[in-house]
Image (cartoon, rainbow, N blue to C red; front, side):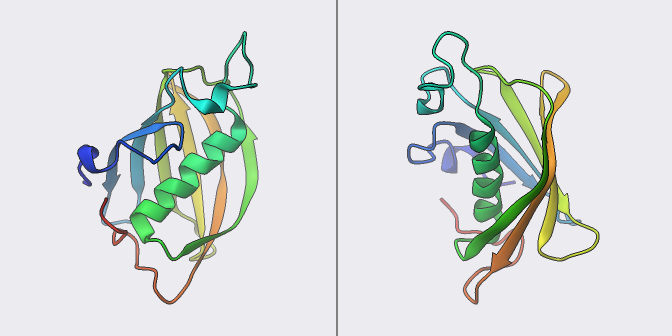
Length: 139
């Protein structure tokens, strides 16, 4: 497990990452929270704030970079399904696991209030300097 104290400040990302765990099967779990004062809520929507889909996708990619290293490049998101709204200050659990058909594809799931709120796949590319899973740069 990567210590939470090393991850809490995501340099203005608009959310906090409180825990990351990586299993021997390369399954990544993490906990995020988007505080009510986050810039993600500016304009989305002032009287009825919800976590934007792009913020959710950004969390997944940030998590992948933290676990695989800074040489990770985003190749795309596939089959993204936003199933429920996420409100400010709601803890979000993230599960990312290797895809079955490609070493560069990972399946992810976000859960909040014990409900699946988003699912999909993230495709990534590694350059020569990127590490393998679990060898991201320490914060």
